[in-house]
Image (cartoon, rainbow, N blue to C red; front, side, top):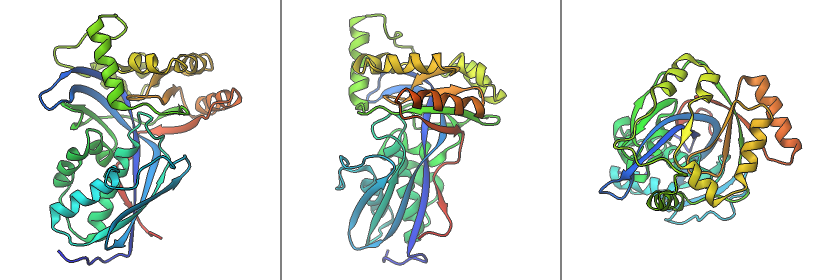
Length: 313
């Protein structure tokens, strides 16, 4: 396919995610752990602008420090663009401008959101007209969290986390997110989880026969009940993340003492997500944490997945 398009630049926005419930099973034949997750997309976004180029390139900016990010073929956004070009036979390249607002290596799927946004942006820019099902399949090749960033909303993820089933959720949930100064590597957190289980420390729950999402979580989401959700949020990776970054204990304790209904390590961490009773409570919690020197970000869930924003510049 020749490099033609109806638009000089395409702007796509994709959300970060929270794992409201995350159960980790055994390692499967492909090397991934079998998981069961209740995902919600959260109103902390990655913005991608895609424009025509003969090469594949990316520049990063936004509200967080992106200086440590690689901008070659190791970057997931570049990989996403090349994968779509290969899939469609597109002969050109793309220049990506990415504004990041989701914490890097923070357990909120920022890199996955970039990849999902790039798939949507390049498909629109190149007018390749890939079906949503095919985009989902391409997303799954890039990483377990990329399909959910494409989908957004609320979903149950099984398998690697990329086998998604939409779930009902009423209203909005209010969160205060506290990023850490340094990220955690997702593979290293999983390895720490495995080592804990091997040593039978008891700090992490035993490997379930087949991980499933607790029905109480789904009931709380359907009811839109923040207190009910606070009582059942869970993350098998939390103990491993806390072992690798013990300072997170203090963050969790302070947030819960300051009015949060519950706090949880987001995904593989180290971002801490605090659930608030409502919007006013979230503001009060954000102020309390900020006064203690923490960066605290307010967000709501659920929100839409990756989508084109009209009027690209």
